[in-house]
Figure (cartoon, helix red, strand yellow):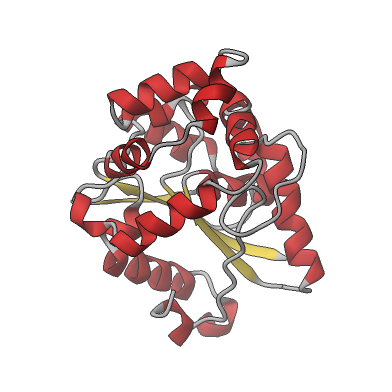
Length: 242
């Protein structure tokens, strides 16, 4: 973000149920998050926006673009989480697989999520990067503390139980009419055929794979993320083209 702020005005909202944002009693599916981001753009009167995000944050811009939101001009989808019926996280580690399975079981899922454990969280996150050392210890601590907020576990359970909605939303990708860049880490949870499927669904989409990068690509290769985002913007900015 500090690097991008040299060229862009950067907005980085915490999604509902994430970070320090509110944790409303809601259905945490793809439509809910896309509605939230559209509301954010509207509230701040943002135009000619480049929407970029990672994981579900990478899928949200694609959904918003498919709705033909006039405030969005470009999309950079970094490792979008829209495959495997929302169970891609299970590919992170054995513990992640167990968490995903447990979340589907009423009462059991709620109980396990309320007994949140730092080691489990750390294990799942480390399964999402190429190099575990790329996760700063202060970030691990912050994510653990914010995840322990009251009712956070309910939001996370809802997110996992509605995870299939992300793949369902890919049906609308064909409606996208603006430039799209898919930016994948070579070691992302998505398999090559799943990545190619996204590229085929979006008309004229560009796709780049970054070596030595996992699911949380900006942690592994922030330099590459910034470089490709800048280059993509330059290729698709009318102001620069003129």
